[in-house]
Image 1: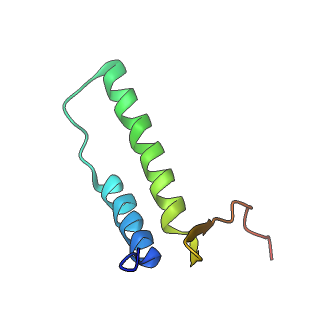
Image 2: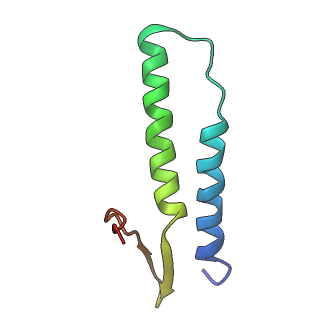
Length: 74
């Protein structure tokens, strides 16, 4: 795994999240449309969370740190 860069992986997930936001809605209607939209929302959330994570690779263990706490009201 010498050529693996966790920061490059995070960048790819940021790019995927942005691509989901730009994804065109296919010409579907009804239930299929709702399922497509729901999947896009899930994809965006998952990709964005990993894209916003702090990463560390130590002794062969990849750690993603994702702060899910709401922003402080300061």
